[in-house]
Length: 161
Image (cartoon, rainbow, N blue to C red; front, side, top):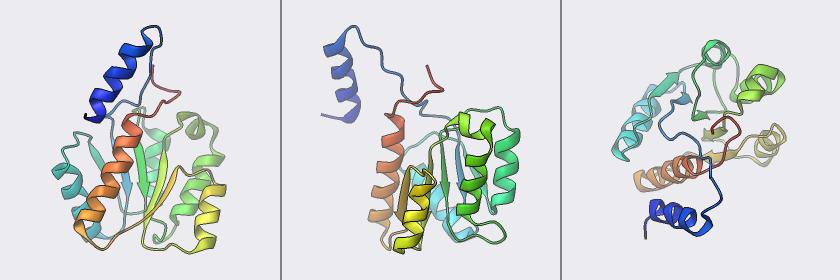
């Protein structure tokens, strides 16, 4: 049974309950300064069949500027931690400090090479929705990205009805 079939079965079983899920085709924001990683992420997400528009930013300042000015609903932010200028953790702190951006409730995950205990603890103190380490094999990377995207496609969200 596919995940989609499970969702239909749940709806059929509950008849009176309406589920509100994330809109699966809204843009995904990816903050990544390594061009090779950007190309690889784009290729993997396309290969996995996701139809989301991908918006890449190579620094947090540009990403923050976009987030503050866009009126689009956004599906997800995938952000590296170690970035030049403003780090990914600084970006998340600025999002949390901005009432308008906080209210958007855009899921925010870190996808990075660093995985020390302190960095992970700090990330969750800032209410990130996930902290993932960039894997070394293509199958692992595909699986991780698939799990992340599929989770958010089925997650309830306060801004979608």
